[in-house]
Length: 46
Length: 294
Image 1 (cartoon, each protein chain N blue to C red):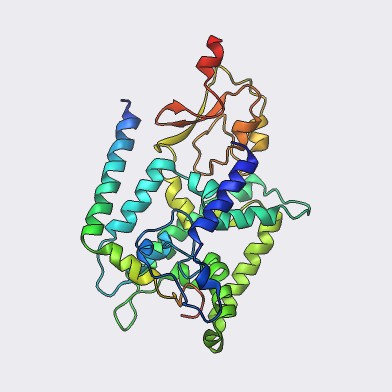
Image 2: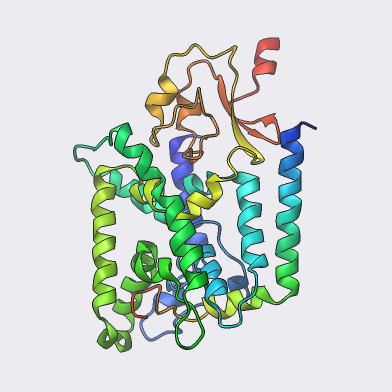
């Protein structure tokens, strides 16, 4: 595999590991909690 | 895949990710609250859009950075990195509702503005400043009296939130209308400017402002989905450059940070010298090696 291929693979592995670590720490629930309510700031009322 | 196929994918993706029909019914449950909202969509798509079935990645990132009990946003950053490494700005060209809206506005038959390169180049850097300052820096550093931060980009700039979230929510919920103030007027002004600019300039928000496009662009040179020029087949006719709506020269920089992988250059290349590659394997438009062998 070329140098760039290794870099891509390493970045992807790091990204997936971060995602899994975040999900294990309950961060997916934080995303859900925010996204399930109207975001007043986003719509210009906050 | 042709231009029509791309439009079909863009439209289908927009419907698929905003298919919570009950959210659009007056008096119905306001937003989708199910498990899919644990996941971010890859493009700019406000999670306050009444039909949204997923979360906005920039909104989710800002929410994590502004939380009172701040944690490093592993989940959202990991997700954004994974999307960037896999497909880069393909998301902008194929899977972003706001990108599609801008493209449709550009179809309105008016004289079009071509921004001179001297102005265009520095303006393109603005999106990186937006990402660094408004999405990450200020939400991280500024704290209100209650200990939480402010999502500066979502609150003061994002026209996507105004168009997909603000306008329909205000139209559907009379309860929200008395709360309209200067912030809503300011964001409406930005939205109107963005809409007007989109009629004359191809995807102005994506070119100059979008922090998500800026983030994905960082991975264009290493992404799994890439563009490749076969120099031996290129006749240097310049057709690809003329066809590129983002003013990229694919012959010189096929994996430019500005390329949204729309494929216009691939379709217009008379010698099929340009192609998408996936993990090094050539995709459309056909395998040159096979053609040569015939």
